[in-house]
Length: 267
Image (cartoon, rainbow, N blue to C red; front, top):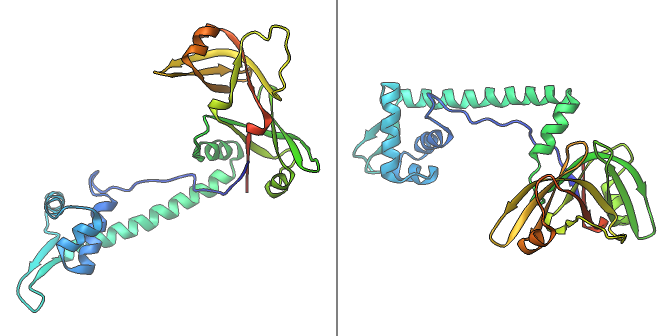
């Protein structure tokens, strides 16, 4: 399996005025200015009618000026409108939002000039269900008629091998020296504490030290720290933990097949 990464925004921020007035509140004001109906505005902003009045009352206490007024009579039967102070506050919010977006964009440009920090934040930004995410550089690409093997070198000297179809490798555009992420589900990792003279066919065999044993009702998450600091997480049954006598500080080897590795490179 392959996945090409897009460039997501690395920075985000939630603007609040006076520590309380957030985007949802200003959505209420904007909807109120548009509809002239507090009931419709509350529904659009996700408030109950009573909740909308409560938040408006709280905002009025902060501003010491009425933000809404009631219109009575007329063909529409009256309604609720923004006061000049309400309009001014809404305009200020929109201006501040635009300035905040410009500021964040400038900082994104600055981050792009800090390759080490930028790469770290981009890895943190990626969201995936795979517990194991190994960052490294592609050290070898070996294409074949149907299958291509890609090796990713990690800090500390370890390597992870991924096996993918040649068509997928071509689409991915994997090249030596390129930054990549190797993703492996914890359930695909087999822990070995004693090979007893046997050799395994699993291409990936990473030796380290057990650093975490988190027991659950049925299964246990075991963390294995590798030389260089990377950690492999394996999900194994409680019975297997007991049979292996797994404990923190014990040496072990994490084994997983090359075809279980999902490779990701930035677009």
